[in-house]
Each structure stands twice: as structure tokens, then as C-alpha cells.
Length: 155
Length: 127
Image (tube, rainbow over all chains, first blue to last red; front, side, top):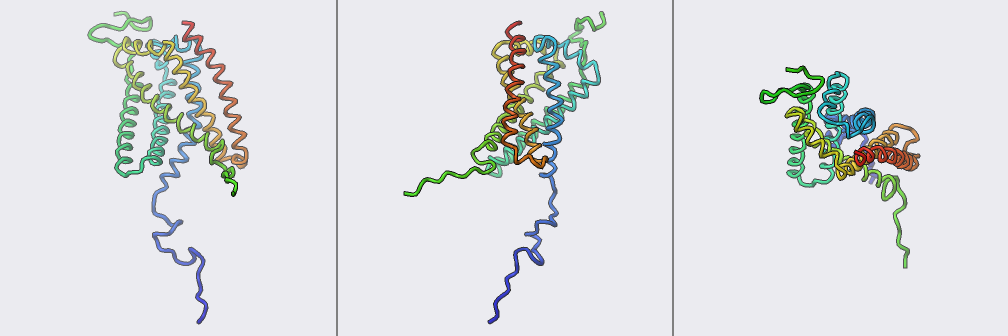
């Protein structure tokens, strides 16, 4: 009896279910991995400047009040800065928590629930933050009473 | 009696690589939850100037001041270790020097935190 020929693993035709190269699945995880590195590098700059301007320069935290926010958002530069920071930080953070949920939650239903809560929170916070940046009014009139500040018109 | 074998030092298990990974996760989760709260407190500028000033005033008390120190400590570590992580992934010699880079991260973190603590605590306690 002739010695049976045993082919080396993965030589010749591989059943589609075992194929590693011609996968039709998306490369979402690779994109997510890359996004974490790119957004992380940008966030280091965005957040370090944010912390310096708000907590170190001038009077630091003692100088923060409504007028401080009004002063910053009077400039489109800081509006765009904060908007970019909001979106990148929330997506970076959400993906980080998604990975942690996948790592530690064993049950399918637990994972689905946790991720449902996570994505809901993300959408709410990103939409809220975006609206706040673009609908901010430095001189609001609340219940007929105008806000008094040196940069507001006197009624 | 055979001697008890201790696992040899692999790239990550039980060494600097693994502990930096743990610290990166914990600081990341802390920062994420702060971020949710931070967007909510800033959103009070759309409620009224008084509402915003009231919540910011609570951030200026000494206990919150120490909390902010912890938050900045977490952010600075996460940032520096994140840069180290990028270097491990994309720099040819990154994996070889990952341990030395961690001590660089810890050293830079300590310097930044000493400087920031002096500045921030003088704002919080100096009024």
C-alpha cells in the first residue's frame, strides 16, 4: 500500500469558511484600531491646549465663569476647536469602552445591553454638546430679564 | 522536589507592558465618564449664566480641586502612554524600547504633574 500523501495545511483549495485571505467581512476592527491612534495623537494637542488655556494660564480655574465661556466662543476658532475635541474625544472614548465591554462581558445579551446604553449616551452627549456650541447666546434674555455684562447691549 | 517555575518575562505578562496596559484602561474609563459629566455641566450655559456659574463654583472648592488634580494626572498619563503605544506600533524599534519608553512616560508625567499641581493648587487654595 502506497504511503498516503498528506498535503500541508491550507494548500490548494480552502473551504470558504476557513479562508483567511478572501474574507468578505468588513475591516471595521482595523479601521477602529487606526482611528484610536490618529484621533489619540490629535487629542493630545487639543486637550493639552484646552487644559493650559483653562486651568494654567491667567487665573486658572478661578477665572472660569459664564463670561469666560462667552469670551472663548465669541471666536469661531475656539468653537471649531471645542467641536473637534468633543467629537474626537467622544468617538475615541466610546470605542475604548466598546473594546472593554467586548473583553469583559461574556454573555451576548449583557454585551448588547451595555453597548446599547453606551451608544445612546454617546449620541445624546455629542448632539447636546454640538447644539450648545452653536446655539450659545452670550447675552440671553431669561423670563424677560436681560443678562448684564460689559459685553452685552444695555436694554 | 522540582523548583517552582516562574513564568519567563514575555513582552507583556506581569511586567511593565501589562501594567501600563492596565493603567491605560483605568485612566481611559475615568476620563470617559468625566467627559460625559463635563459636557453636561458646560451645557448649563444654555440654561442660564447663574446655573453655569453655580456649578463651576462647586468645582473651585478644595475637594473638587484635588479631584481635578487626579483627573489631569489620568489625562496626562493616558496621553503620554498613548504616544508610547503609537511608537510601539509604528516605530521599528518601538517594541524593543517599550520598557524604557514607559519610564520616559512616568518621568515626564511626574514633571508635568509637579508643575501643574503647584499652579492649580495655588489657584484652588489661594482663592
